[in-house]
Length: 156
Image (cartoon, rainbow, N blue to C red; front, side, top):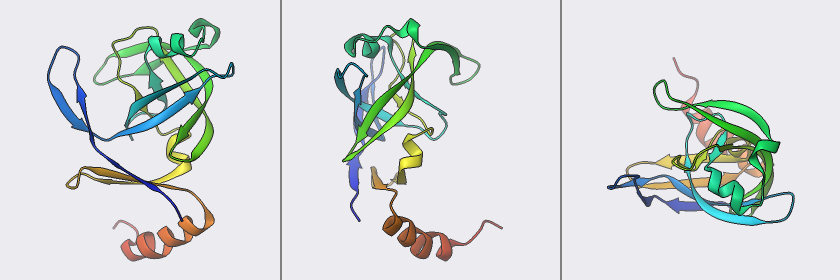
């Protein structure tokens, strides 16, 4: 069983300041075979992966050709964007995933649950400031079932 450990990374905020966050290196590839690499915020509260408009331009994607959609943000903020299907690569695992490109650039790069969380067992170690991403395989599933889920049991 192989996986990767990602130390938290420093991200500079829009308008100044910095924060230490669970960011994972990801590579996105368009159907035209253009690729970009980025640090994406692992966000269990996000349904789908979200990228800024500039990333679509870097991939030579006309965002308006995707399905127009609204994405909820923090609070009542709603973002407008366009849904596309891309190849993502995290660690050694490549997979197709839906991605929404926002129609603006002042949004964070977020790795959401759909597709991304389905491909890995993810362990966030907040105190140790690191993330373990273990690709879902039969061996990994057996290990997690036996050593984690059976030991911990169901919530009361």
